[in-house]
Length: 357
Ligand SMILES: Cc1cc2nc3c(=O)[nH]c(=O)nc-3n(C[C@H](O)[C@H](O)[C@H](O)COP(=O)(O)OP(=O)(O)OC[C@H]3O[C@@H](n4cnc5c(N)ncnc54)[C@H](O)[C@@H]3O)c2cc1C
Image 1 (tube, rainbow, N blue to C red):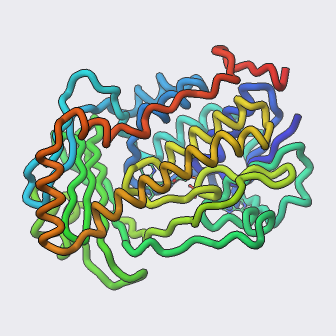
Image 2 (cartoon, rainbow, N blue to C red):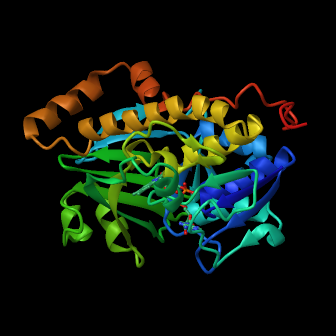
């Protein structure tokens, strides 16, 4: 069985690794001149670590990343609203996105990777399965689901970067009125950060000014970063299906979501393993992945409403009070509620799958 994966981002490469693991012949077609990943940090959540474990890449991810537990949610003045203890929790692996991409890339032989290879449609692809991992603006999605709505602006814009440090900080998310920020410390003292603000798309804003009054060290993280990446945040309205004919949508092409739960790339890893686990059975893939990813998508929308989108001072005070009063167990449940995913039972522990053997 042969699969062509369109797109060599985290989702596409993970699909290629996973399908090869259950015996598929795979090619990856990437339109960029080389395989790579821009961006800053990614928190590899426990659910995504289980996907990497199934791919046999968890040790490599742990080696390049930094296991983190303690941290939580803070107010703009730095007070902890929810503070996670360092014991008894599954660890999040803090990584640079390029390192996660590199772990997947190195697991694939170079002869199956085609760069400068933009795909304009599925019809010309000679394969039993086409994996559309071509991102939020997926051309293949537009082709196979022409009536599905395209991405819509989520009302906020984000900046991301890696500050040189050295810093010794816990993982944290800071909720403000009309903005939020995240800190993901890497093991070598560098810190991946993002800040986001409610604003019109392409608004001319300076994050250094916008976040100047936020707690330390956020202002200096932003100010000391040489390469700051700006992204207006778009999301993809919920699709009625992730599959059509021999095409499977995967990753942001299927379910691009707001970043407020930090689960977008993690969902792409889950998609990839599931697709392989069900032996490329697209009905089963759709049945397993659509409910799961769409509930995380909705969770992220809700997190946005109670986080970044809350702007009235009274509402923000009440939200912060509610978070501080919440029993710790409820706070931890809230922060980890989407991490409980397990690899589908179709998969045998060695990665082989009866559906394809
Ligand atoms: C501000 C922000 C913060 C985020 N933070 C996190 C986080 O902390 N944790 C997390 O899990 N997720 C996070 N995400 C989400 C995460 O970035 C995405 O969900 C993830 O990268 C999607 O991967 P993908 O492979 O599906 O798509 P992409 O990374 O978009 O890859 C698509 C690839 O397809 C290629 N391509 C496109 N069209 C074609 C074509 N026609 N032919 C061939 N190739 C093509 C592109 O060049 C690209 O390489 C964040 C997103 C944003 C915006």
